[in-house]
Length: 220
Image (tube, rainbow, N blue to C red; front, side, top):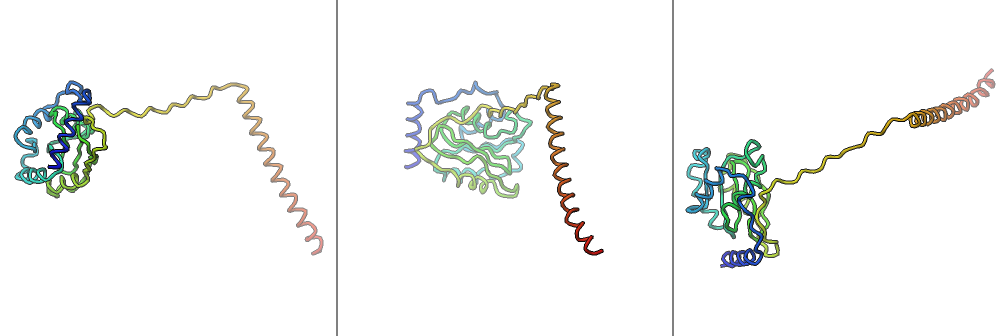
């Protein structure tokens, strides 16, 4: 009942917000996304053909864990990485999946060791990602992620991120222009410091010599 109420409230917020929903035209078409969204029409778990042997019958265990989640969860077990269109930004891939599917919920991408997700049109704080050994059952990996999920109606309802993260601006340093005046000034400054250091050292040496000389005279 609580889950249904949350979905209804989220739907109302999206309706009132109007322009919150992102468009699938804002990002490139990806066959993994197309296949996952098609599979989600009949089941909450999509398994990429490359992972079929690895997943085996674990998709049923994943579905059972999803059924106990406090919010709609859509899981895609698929390859990710820097060589794909998301360029190792798996949260962005989750956003593509979410916006293409168009339904509020938690969208989770699993690759066997990393579980990454994003909340879409849902008042929730979803963890960025969690990690586990490849020997850990997928249902346990999903549980680890969902256990950190926090539903909160105070969280702003917004679509999942689909755009690339902005890059930090590079720091640039202006090279100091060489002038004869600066060179002379730096030379004079260095010479002055050198003379002062030499004078200080000479003063210490002469002072020690003055202390030692009377002692030697007394010994004679």
